[in-house]
Image (tube, rainbow, N blue to C red; front, side):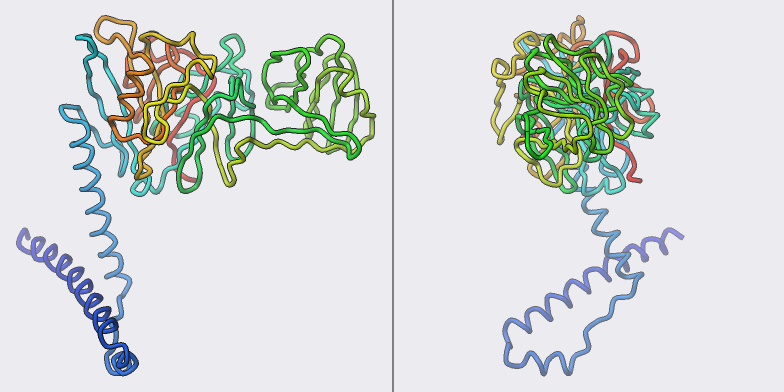
Length: 411
């Protein structure tokens, strides 16, 4: 039996090599005898590959790619504990030392060319923004094999603070134009995101400052959708609210309004919204700047950690000075080969003191990230792999979260 298996493997390999040689031979003949090309193909029958042979060649190719990924991970993470989560998905546990102090790190690296059956996306704790659940609940609800805590959120309510788009639907807008991570069908990008939004009735057009976010200035005009909840936020001083259903204004008030099921509420200064009337046909345009065409998902964080291959931590510009020092950390980045990397760093304990943002940036660069951003950290840092929390958050199992970044099966 062993001999038969061995012969079968040799035959599979030989078949693949033979087809490769034949392809090179035909290509060579075409290159060096162009005048005779027609005669050549008229007199030589090209090999016809049956489905079984094509399948064998694909399997050989995939096996080589898997082996190359295995070797790359072993080279990149020496002395680490490496586990296979699924094809193209590795979980790495390692310890680094900074100033003689240990830091415990969990990494998930995903070769998206091998993990073809999976997709990366943000996930909310529930169908409303003002909710929180543990990462285990979020992962189980989305049937995910990997989950890492996501963007910042308001602790009291769970509303995400920053840009969040899921399946091309914009749930929340940016805060302080902070860095965001864009997920496309064939890759990733990072940028500081601004909102480019407007509300118009054809004659009048006004700027909309944000969507489903807490009011930061009384002069801001905000949009609230049903994802925010049943009612809009309180009206600002000297302000008013406009309820829109199916593209038509159905109510205007100085009080909080119920958000229509097929619409939204615009709230802002009366001096800005005073030219709109009930029954006006209106349009709400929501775009990001930069306008990422074909982007499927966006999750924000900040600051940058790695930008175009260089360590780049713009903590002051993104108004994130409060998160300095050594702390538990979470990060997301990608390599030149489009491998996706998720990182959770334990901290605030004797066996793992945590990282500064610069140390985290240097670590992300060292494992090949060409672009990476910081996610919510501190008590929020928690990583889930194949059914369990793998790091050691301060609260066992991790605190209740607003959102996470998950790796789940494609539907």
